[in-house]
Length: 326
Ligand code: NAP
Image (cartoon, rainbow, N blue to C red; front, top):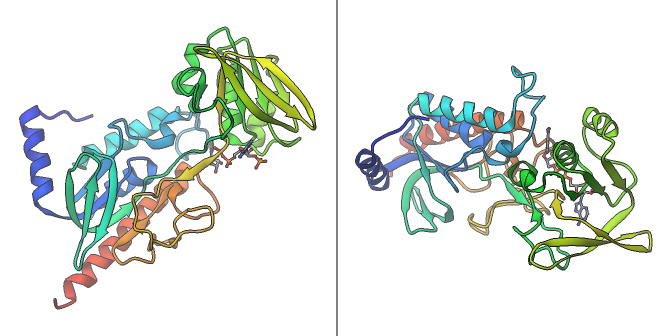
């Protein structure tokens, strides 16, 4: 990561707040980082906003990525860091800031952050991704951070030698179960169906793990504990059981991060943004790419492509606007 001195950084932040940017990219996962690279190459005045200063989005939490061309095997964190370094090496600008809302003005967008910082830009690229879906059972909220986790790679080490449950039956749940099986004594993989929906190669690997116990056709009714999680109750086709565990990892999918966008932004029934392959939404000057977009395949490789397409569309939009008399 390129480091700048404190005073220079404050000066740069101030400059970005005062000037009209060509594009603000909201999110620094694969779509946002790719957009940052393409924006820089297109010589646009661009700023990428990231929620927590870590960047990488959910990619950074992936234990092992085996489907990103050019890397037979790489950790999600390292891949995300490589993308980030690439953007920074080209001079891509990043600020930490959680966008609370964006407002469309006549000729530009106002981008408002939760801490009160405001930016102005001619276009906005929504690349904020998704956040983990909640299971919504009693005890989940109460024990979040006290045995209930949504990130195996972040929290798995706290459960070394213990017993945990992973809830879900698709890619994230299987990846989490695989990762945790190398750390903990026993993993219960709890799925509401009798078959998994995860990548077949990973399913085969899962079958070789002696300490992973699959609970099929099983739903979670509640999570229990004192200061920390101690057990969870399941229902397997009418048969209820309370099973002692030290941790519960919830991997039941994601919901798009779109609360900050105007209500009139077109979405599908699940809340994903309706934008074409070119990233164009129904609002002029607003483009959407990555997992936040309605699409058939949510992967790092499709997110990266989206980021590039959004910048190409933003460039075209800016070019056409520059020809329109005010
Ligand atoms: P997902 O594909 O949406 O799957 C969610 C899983 O949770 C499904 O098994 C679903 O059950 C289950 N589920 C949903 N709501 C539930 C509830 N209320 N109670 C119990 N179970 C519930 O989510 P994901 O696994 O997080 O994957 C998200 C995206 O990221 C996918 O496109 C995936 O391919 C991608 N991803 C890729 C990789 C990789 O390539 N290495 C790794 C992780 C994620 P049903 O099966 O019954 O619907």
